[in-house]
Amino acid sequence: MKYDIVISTSHKNKELASKVASELMSMGFKVYSPNFSHGKSEEEIDDNFIKFLLDEHLEAIDNGKILYVICVEGNVGKSVSSEIGYAKAKELKIIFSEKPLDLGINAYAEDYISIDSLNTFLNI
Image (cartoon, rainbow, N blue to C red):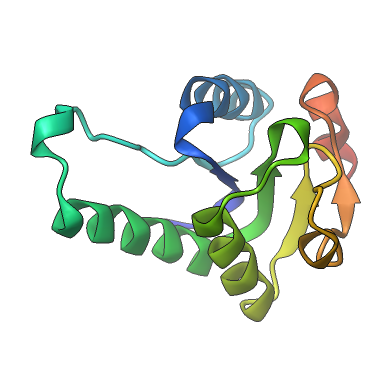
């Protein structure tokens, strides 16, 4: 499936990512939002399942146009950083919800669109 927007964020922001994805979809965008558990309990999540999730996300990036990084208070974790690097290599436009604290990660920013201004995506 092709995506207009692929969301990347930390597991701790999963509810926010779901809300953002719903709002963007209501505007007509095809959105991939990470499914952090696929309904599995914490006990069922092992290294193989984590690899499955990572591969699933990279495949979405392969089929995306924009990577939207939700980085609450500018925080970007290691997994999200790797997704940003992968998206850059795949030539996706990289947009952050806030300015990342890490200057190296911020260097990849092509734009910033706050969570409160998602309708700005309509102008891209």
